[in-house]
Length: 234
Length: 354
Image 1 (cartoon, rainbow over the protein chains, first blue to last red):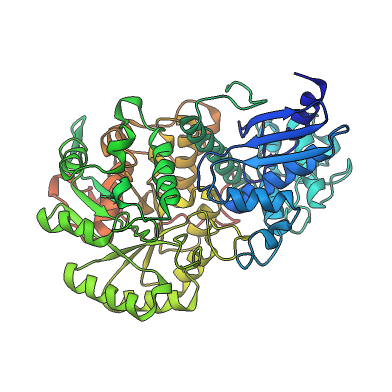
Image 2: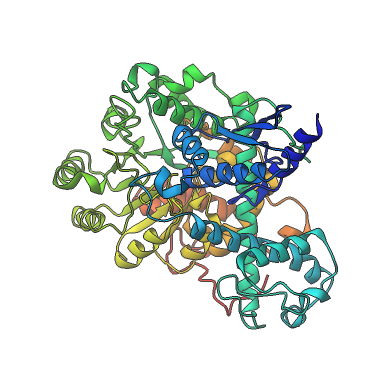
């Protein structure tokens, strides 16, 4: 694999399925990725079903276009979504940088920032469960958690990810900011509200992880090959 | 009926189909959608145990004999509930229509409950058809698929004013059970098509109706749990939850069940195989044998008992549909009330912590 191929694949690894909050490479959604000597990148994406929600599909194709176009040395980017009911509309719309409303003329009233934010809030809730569960298992009380700042949590990849998602949403994510915040208002969550907040955080994580499990299973039935950059399943 | 370890389980399959998705039923010009739809189902089929998988050709169109054997003879089901989905823009005679299901409903008295469907975009004609179907077949429930494409429209919401007219008609006609099923499209396309806030509103505005959310809201099981705990007339349909996860992803299945048992409660969960996506046999047998795997992550979920499983597999649905349960399959008086609305957990900020 050439240096350019690697750089493009690394760029694709920054693109996430907004619903599953995982890189499209890890999910097996990158069917192929080639870069010509002249710097033309061609990426083919694939999804678990022909009827995956078109708004999420559009976001992944558009994000892939943006990420690959930004790789130094890439002169032309083509992202092709294969075998989806809205492939033609999405591929053409993204190539023309038309945005979602113009791509789905008459069928959409807004761009997808609101949808993306809704799912980032879910990612924050799921991340909250991932970070808090070990703390509770180690003996932290609810009052301890409510008083904790981000810098007081032992470092972990889960914590880094939670902070990044909070920052993406425009929520506080600094060292001195509270560990537990409401993902809609950004306000700190007090001890009284914490049991319900943590229950919801866990339900959100269970939902996302179950969806990812179903998607990867269905993808494997549909395509019997590993995607570019897809890791072996644990 | 299924018997295991001296316990008798009355089984109601609340969600099954008799479809025809073979190429000769594909609408000209819409072949790619008809093909895409059934192949999407086939992907889900592949999440069941290997020895229960069918070739695609059989999966597109299975016979009456297949259905009767898989569901009743081998599948342990006592009563099966048809949930029609029309999709007439893609399939000439429709995919799994009330009329097609009615063939078996009429031929095998006592085996099936025939639900019908409606679509608010069909206006007065659709209301007429609904009345006709209720008069003809005594339908007590409807299946609503909000993502159906119709004349350029990609879907609808239960809160659309026209939908409320249909819900009012349901009340009038004695239809009690509204099975709501979300799909990937809706208008406008920039919104999350799987969002259930319309079901939430409708459930509040129609307290006399039961809203069974199919697939327990998957892929929005978290939103569903939080909605269901606040609405006494919202129930969890377990089709897909069992079929897609119990075999393929047992740990995720256990966690989803734990969440549903906590937020929704065992009185408000109903089994459905989603046949022919999956056969009921392995689902019924597996569920009766099921318990949480060991591990601290499952410790604080509500426990499941034989009584819980009896309710989920059949007694809750029997209550919702007024199905007579044989005496030997009923619960003892101290084992709770199937389908009890008031026994929902009603999780609030004051509930005990995780």
